[in-house]
Every structure is written in structure tokens, then in C-alpha cells.
Image 1: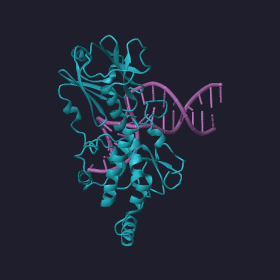
Image 2 (image 1 turned 90 degrees about the vertical axis):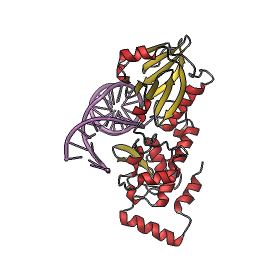
Image 3 (image 1 turned 45 degrees about the horizontal axis):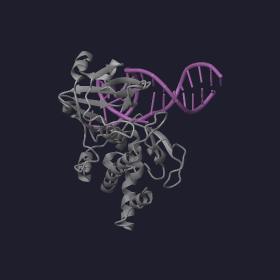
Image 4 (image 1 turned 135 degrees about the vertical axis):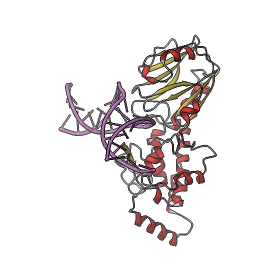
Length: 304
DNA sequence: CACGAGACCTGTTCGC
DNA sequence: TGCGAACAGGTCTCGT
């Protein structure tokens, strides 16, 4: 599940605590329990257990879809992959059904990593940058300008959706937010990035950031049986809305497969134009309406 | 470099 | 109702 907004939400909860649970910052890890050792990416189980004990949590942050927990003398990285979750629970409470790893935080609390599909991974390392090295830019950072985005697209020819999902291209975008961004930008997911007009590039840059921020504001999405507290799922434009009406134009949302991932589009708002037609349409529109664009109008109508 | 298939896993939902 | 198939928020590796 968890994409940038969900991971961000989880980090915020760990960092600030909630009404019921404390912040983990400043707490000491007094014990570590590995119920599914496959969760541990590095180091070995023995080393992990001996090194983690006694470490104090200094800071919780996020990089891409990774949770980063800085400890006294090491850093723990957690990737939730498809079904992972991280939460603080009282020691008096029974462990969640899919708990794979948990940490004792003194006498009253536990930090639990639960993960039904066992895809999630935990690293304990002195050099987190070695793991995080390949990640692309943070899409919400001020350094990620439309020019940076455009330059990273330059010279490439891949289909745009698989590229958005490529964590070395941008960090944090997953299947939901890719579909939502492309719909907001009015771009078909199979469009070759070589065919994107400068205007579409700018629009997509804005859409990605807008959708991610909206996801964070709504504290992420809770879908299927995994409830996480967020409600972005109630505001999806296309994701998992196959057959429903597009909120913008009323056409039926379609599902297709792009790069082996389920993909949702509005066929009206996101036409896949043949290479020649794309240019022709854009230029004819330009002659008619030099400055305004259809997409901008749509965007305005789409503001929530 | 781009793309697809398969692997890693388990749980839920869908279709017959 | 039961049962197998399809599908799921991610990423890695291998082959073409």
C-alpha cells in the first residue's frame, strides 16, 4: 500500500504520538523480537538483536517510501512494501495478527511492525545512505522544481506511468498516486515521455505534487480490509473506480494493465493519441487559443 | 535502455 | 455454499 502520503502519515504519528499513544522520540529500545526473520534485510538476526538493545530513538523521518529511525549510534530503515504498517501499542494489549517484528519501549509501550504479506523489510545500519542512495528526488521538496522534473524526463522514451513508479526517477510515488496524478494532468499512462509537450510536463509535475499533498492532508488512503485512518480513498478520481463515472466528464472509468500494474483511466480525459495526432491536436489548439489550455480549465474545475 | 515475466507472500474477493 | 482463480498499495532479478 503504503506510498509517500501513507508513510508520511505513519512517520508523523510515530514522531508526534496521538491522543492514545506517546511519541517514540526519546524512548529507549529495551528489547527486540523477530517473529518472522525474513523481515530483516540486514544485519544477521544475532547482530541485530544485540545492537538494537539500549538504543535511544532520536528522530523519525521519511525518505521516499522508507521510514527512517535515527538511533543513538545506528539508523533503522523500514520499508513497508505492500502491506506493512508501523504502530505503537500498549504492552498490555495482545500483538496484532500480522506482527512480524516488535520492539519494547520501556515498560508500557511497544513499537510494532505488522505485515500480512511479509514483503516488508528492516535494515539496521551505520550508513543509511548506502540503502537510500539510488532514490530519485523527493517530489515535495522545494528542490524538485518543474525544471528538475523536465530535465529528468529529457531524452527518455519510456511510458510515463512505469517511469513515475520508478523510485530512481522520483521517490515515493506508487500505483494509486501515479494513476491519480496522470488523471489530474489529463495524460494517458502509456504515453511515451518523449511525446509529452512542455505544457504537459509542467502540468504533470504540478499534478503529482498536488495529489501527494492531498493524500497527506487526508492522512493517506485506507483500502481493502486494511484500515489506516486516512480517507483519501473516498476522493479517488480513478483508482479502483472501474465502471464509475469520471468526476470531471462523466465518462466510465476503465481499467487496463500498464507495466504489469492495474491502471485506471478516464478514456475521455486521458486520450492516448497516436504520435502524429498528439502534435496536431496540440498545435491546432494553440492556434485557436494561444495561452489558455484545456487542461488548465479542467484543473480549475477539479480543485477540491 | 526498455520491457515483460517471475519471484517473494498472504489475504480477500470474484466468478462459476 | 464451496472452490479455484484473480487481484492487491512494492521491488528485485533475469532474460530478450
